[in-house]
Every structure is written in structure tokens, then in C-alpha cells.
Picture 1: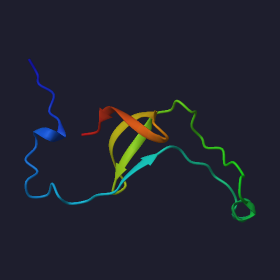
Picture 2 (picture 1 turned 90 degrees about the vertical axis):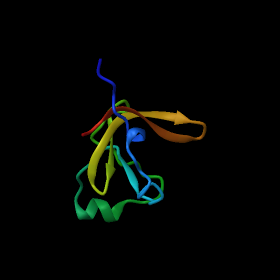
Picture 3 (picture 1 turned 135 degrees about the vertical axis):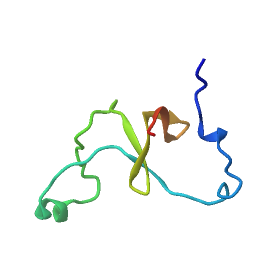
Picture 4 (picture 1 turned 90 degrees about the horizontal axis):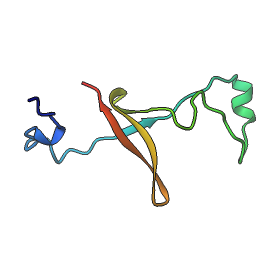
Length: 85
């Protein structure tokens, strides 16, 4: 029987207090510099992903997990569906 190893199973006593920045990558788009500088308040920039696309969580630019966007009260959250090893 294989037990799934989680981050909680690791000994984090030496680094557990260190703060890190985690970024959720939703998608992207390409535009010209002219289009970029023409953007104004309330414009909408269409991304290359659908609303239900998988989100990648990046730690220092490297993927560490993938997940689904979820609503958490008045905020967005990510439900982890895969840890990237």
C-alpha cells in the first residue's frame, strides 16, 4: 500500500518560518506595445485560457502545483489537484 507523501510529512523545523511568494498563473496574451499603452481603466484583457482551465502555482518561477480556481468568500482560491515533483 503506497502512502501519499505530503509537504506536511517533511521536517521543516529549519525553514518552516521562512516566508515565500506563491504566484497563481492564470494565462497570458500577446499585444503590441501600442495596444499596451492604449489600455485604460475598465478595459478587459482577454487571456488565452478558459474560465475552467487548470491554474499553475509557481514558486520562484518554478511550477510546484496545479489546481482549479474556486471562490472562497469574496476571494479567489486554488484547489490543488496535482503536486509537481
